[in-house]
Amino acid sequence: MRDVAYPSKELTHSLTIVTTTFLALLLVVQSDSIPSRRPLMAVAQTVAINTFVNRVDAWVFNQGWARAGTRAWGRNLRLDWEWDEDAFPTNMFAHPYHGGLRPSTTGS
Image (tube, rainbow, N blue to C red; front, side):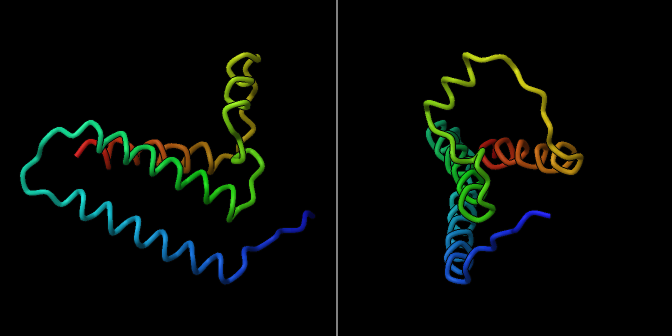
């Protein structure tokens, strides 16, 4: 059995505040009465959501794969494909949910 490191109460509290602020900001930005196309806003929201999810994985859940930078991106593009060893709940629920965040937030 592996040891699990839980985040401190201060980190959990800080992430709660950041999450609440982030979601409130998205709600305000999304509550326009006249729909219009804003490609820069769509890109900014997509980057913000993906960065947020990545940082939670890296800082809260302490996942090594979430600590990747541009060198890892280049290496992954050059090397062969690898088999996905994620668990059933991850592949059936977490990946589709995260994939649905982009169109649902940036498409409205």
